[in-house]
Length: 86
Image (cartoon, helix red, strand yellow):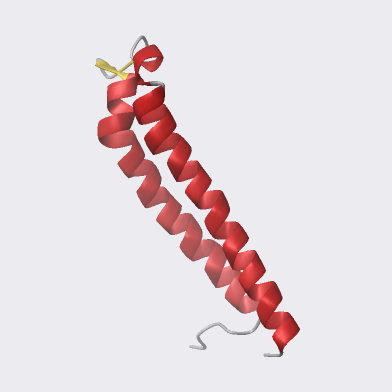
């Protein structure tokens, strides 16, 4: 792969990582800590929403983000022809 394609590949890769890390930060820190008080007024399954985000929601979102990252990277690898051939 030439240098320009490598730069574009890593630029897109870092953009994906930035997007996913921002989502993770918002869910785990903002919803789980900063907004826990106001969110506790909403109940999910009998538990306050702020508590749910702090205890379980951020974990579920993190696992979902892993699958999204794998999907995006597989597409990116195919786009730049650096995927693993089967």
